[in-house]
Amino acid sequence: MKQIGIHFSLKTTSRNEILVDYSSVCEDFYFINKGILRIFNINSEGLETSRFFAFENMFCTALPSFIDQKPACEYLQSIEKSTLLVCKREDFYKLISLYPELDRLYREILELGFITSQKRIYGFQGFNALEKVQWTIKNQPRILQRVSNKMAASYLGISPSTLSRTKAKL
Image 1 (cartoon, rainbow, N blue to C red):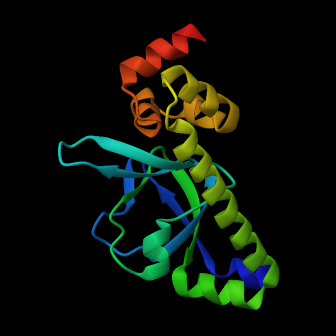
Image 2 (image 1 turned 90 degrees about the vertical axis):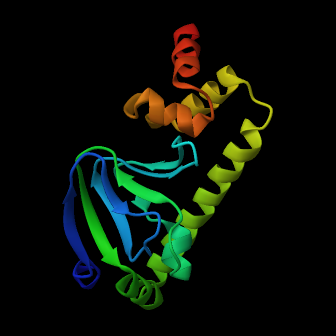
């Protein structure tokens, strides 16, 4: 496994550091040793919508841009001081071609991400605020435990004040 480790470099980020900008192409695949990363967009009125949060022992990247090498059209941000292992795209694809177990792990990460995303999208359709919060508590509790109400609310598609009132009812 030493051969794998040489393809990763250590990166320490500051709070709210942008790792991938909206118009840039994503070249890095991240493993989070400590901290939280989020993927988000900003609409024309300046409102942020969080799409994904990644915590310790998870992988994260701006996947569409990482794969197709086109501008990300989203932001990847470290929302707290974080310690990351970074693998360059070229090295990443070499590793998954050389090590079938890494290729399998990558596929499992993609499948789990897809399933979670689909459950969230379809589950949230027709859910009221309470049901969205209850779903998040059951399926992704770290979001409500470690992320600001503003960011969590943007993930849930509700206002921060609605999130606060809903959490108080639980």
